[in-house]
Image 1 (cartoon, rainbow, N blue to C red):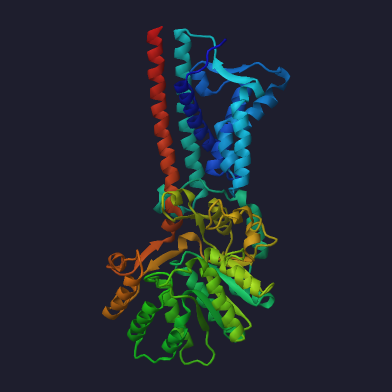
Image 2: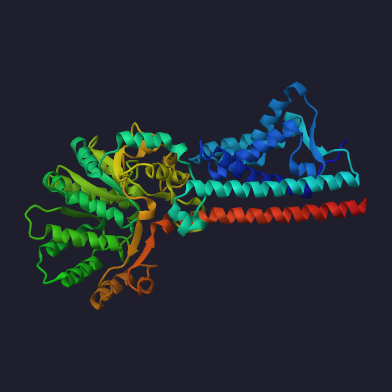
Length: 563
């Protein structure tokens, strides 16, 4: 009977093969990049699984097993060797198990448990089921050991160098010059221009002017929900203001509901709009005072875009008979006992106003999931109240970084690894809009700001939104917090009272953050900074590979000395 590998040898062989497969996946991804973008995690796991299968079919062992002079020992039907091997590796190998359990856009508990049960049974009885196991091979001479070590180290060295070259070229070719120049550590391989040709072709034939698209929706729907980007993003409110200040909006729609702001503050804002001020300084001071008492969930809403938007609406509405009817939707959440019902409460505030005031049409601004028409979200309740009369439109933004989220941070990454961004960079006048239905964009798996265990991750974009607005590329966007008079003595006094009523909120945090005035963050840092993790991982894997080669040398020389 041929001896088995020891546990430590098995683990080291597994690590050698995993690291080898990681670098191999970089080469495969770079080779395929012209036609297809290979996602980093699933791409690595698929490469690792394929590496096992190919090595076993051709050489009957992997590189890690080769170093320990081990490999496959087959006691089954030789004519069925390949089917048995593929089934064995596809159900019981580590990369296959991870792929089957977690390699889905949507993580279903039932599917997870069923796959776990099947893989566990196969893993426990795999020697009996597949008649394939790993054992030591014959051959123990010093020359053989030295040859294996030399070949393993050479293979690793060549692979690391080749992988680094391919990855670097892939990164340079698929990223914008701005990102390469200003934030090279944020640049990682992304979808190529050729791989998004169908998206570019669709845009050239089907894109519409943003405002024309929105007003076209109002010909088919009574209420349109705009899905806001991150609350602090500035440029989106330039677009929103352009829409609501358009004569078509003022004459035919008129009403704008916003998630931000308390319903109890509606009259106070109307009074602010009607008031005459001597100069802009007075406008700023009074608006800052109004914002102090117009909070909803938070202690302070310091976002510059909201202040600027309300100020611009003041000048637009002041002294006019026909105004943009700005209607706040939220509640002042000092008492948080019903906070879990916030979406239904905001929706009810909107629905009751529409009915009570006999408002026929409205534009509604909601952030992220609140704009979804799926159960539990504000958009859902509104669509139930007005069936067939509600559309929702997504403004281009990013997806959540799951890696950062697991580390306790909420950071953004490009949607679908930047596939859409690449497509929009290929067309002139990329600020445009279109329906998701009938577009290649709508057919993509939904990866908005939701967790993998949320069932909507199993849907497509066309199932979640009516349409899409692309307004400014990620690099052109930016966030900003702070505005004039925010901490005037009277305002701070009111905020201190609010602070005392809210647990776990600190006004001093905001004062420290804004002590130097308005704070700005560029879009290049918002959307790409978390990609630095992937580059860190690559550097770390290079380090691990060097350590592995050193360990292999030590093991080899140690065993040779004992012969």
